[in-house]
Image 1: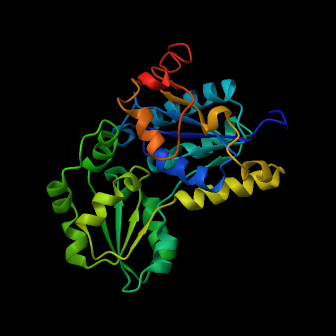
Image 2 (image 1 turned 30 degrees about the vertical axis):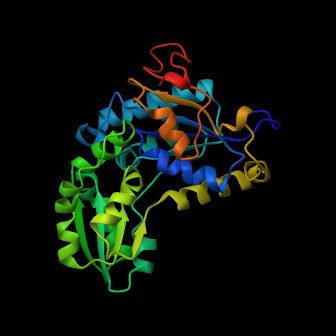
Length: 287
């Protein structure tokens, strides 16, 4: 990439959950150009084999890097991060940042040492999660919920479909009964549900996700290459649109453009069925 061009980060997820991470990155680094890549044709990843997830992630990210050379790659998907990071790092020299549930910072906040971990069914079963809990929250009582509906409810928000609050409240019952004071949002989709989660669990004091930590890591990587000052400057893209391209491997979700704008992530272009159709197949205004 030219030294005169703004630094660029490629943010990848299976759906819209990674937008919560992209929003954190943009708030910390407003001069950074963002390319958002969603494999929504493969969504959800939780019911896919590791081999399929690795193949889809690496294939799409390789193609995106050809068209959008980037200073960093963020795999903003907990499920993908558990399996794909070594493969990505082996195939590219671009720094790769993954996401793990924020057990360590949550344990530092909890007062009553009762914590809730909200994750996908696939994530709550991963052995690496047991290791995180043992290392950073060994003195805490951890209640885990791996509910299959939450990711879909977050995706539906894009189309204006409201979260089923009664169903959500029932799903959160184990946290209420355990009296947790801290909840780890162990999926990047879940910060998009935070308003509804707060309403369901009004006694929870701390809600902890990984977005800010990922943004700090991206900032550190840019500092190593001398590009942090540019990334911390004003929005550099034409028309003040921080997302130069939002690429969806399936149909672009209805309402995605105003949804992204509501997160401060106005997109210059939205493309669907990517890369099966030419870039720019869908204009932002019609997505």
